[in-house]
Picture 1: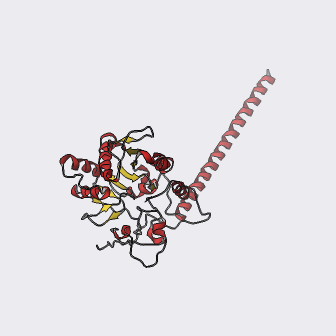
Picture 2: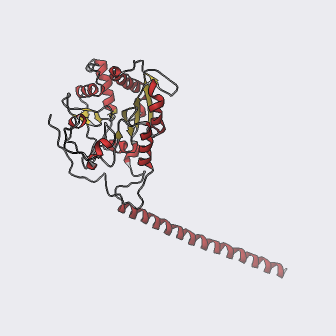
Picture 3: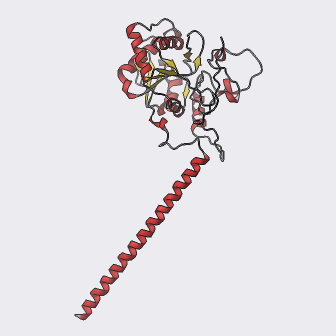
Length: 327
């Protein structure tokens, strides 16, 4: 009996000792994990201090900007142009619609409008009417792009994050002639806020806006002005352009003195040629061929310079170029 009691006491002590040791080790491990987590957080703060222009997705308010993209296309361009948009930047839109003269299983939305440059504005009118009826609540901003335009959606969301979609605004590459407040280049792509879309639809319902011209971007700009939709500034904090109606080489190369091409003469702000032309956060380029779509996709999302420390802070305030072109 005495041996049994001794064995019970010994076993109980052994179990209690094991449990005590296990608890001590657990506490030690927890303390080490807490210290490691604190070091990790400190390192993240250091990295953010070293790279002030880079934010995590959780800190970036532009992540909440909802954008519907609609692509103006036609049956003969679905394979040669539109498919390459579908395979690249369009995947980053919250909603993407391909607007054509006929419905197909691409899929395209059939607008019951004939093809041809003379019908581009009718396509635009019908496209926005369709979006208003079927997708108004699916996005806050609505970008129209051609089927040969390349768009960096993250940069677009960043530009739009500064503005309220419930105010009557539209953005793009602002041109000066023909309309008092100017208008946005169609090729570079332009964006309507939700309130701007409402006013565009109202303009045609009331007859305040009409199909008075076949020049699509200028005619839409006239409706925007009539409906008191204001052109918003899409340039970056250094006054550099983000929307471009031509490919990169039309802007980035320094030029010998010459008469300016029309697209620079039309600019609302005094244009800059050479490397200072374009924002680090470019939104769009136009007249981009199929192979160039994939090249821009690679350069935008994959190419990195090892060891390069990014110095441009898009949130830092700078003196910007507010000079407008005199016509």
